[in-house]
Image 1 (tube, rainbow, N blue to C red):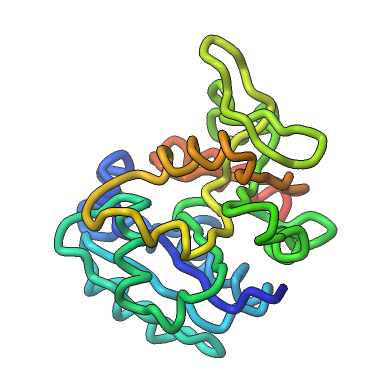
Image 2 (cartoon, rainbow, N blue to C red):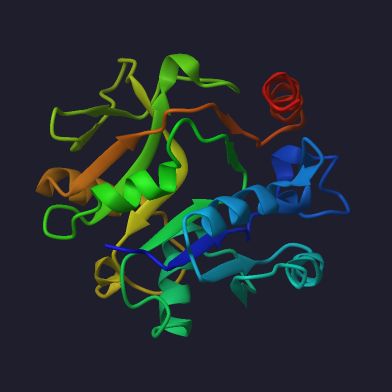
Length: 240
């Protein structure tokens, strides 16, 4: 199916990125001369997305001013008085824009920067997406190649692309990249307010409806000034 809508999660406080976020929201911090938010929006434009919902909180007026420059894509802003986290933010967006978020849509973190390999990852996700089999499809990278701190990884993947959480004290081969496709029906029974997506994903894993797809290019999580430096250095070697 063709996915024409997306949500960008941009309501965080950016505390780990201090002092760079003292006067600027993290989504507008530049990576290789381009704000992180622009990296994400450019991927969505390439995928043919037409409507983007962006939630904001900290220094929201700067993001509101920035997105006015975007062309060929419709942007809808939600200001969160209190940060609702991932699950609560999505639930709130569906409530506010039921006509736009009535079908499966992309969800992307605003601090996840990647370069596409031979085929755009969002298009690959779109082609794999099957609502008869899955309720969430996560974009993953290999833990061993995580550019800015691989940690222990997040998931293992079965041969049919279904995901299982990393077991305690084990290293998992794949990391979540902060991008996924989800179905709005998942949130119908969820409460309003602040909560994480993780408990929902645990339930989907048990039901066999949490799936993944592997990204085939470089990825950079940019959450701290140190991670920003790593991303800048590595991207500079790829983009001349």
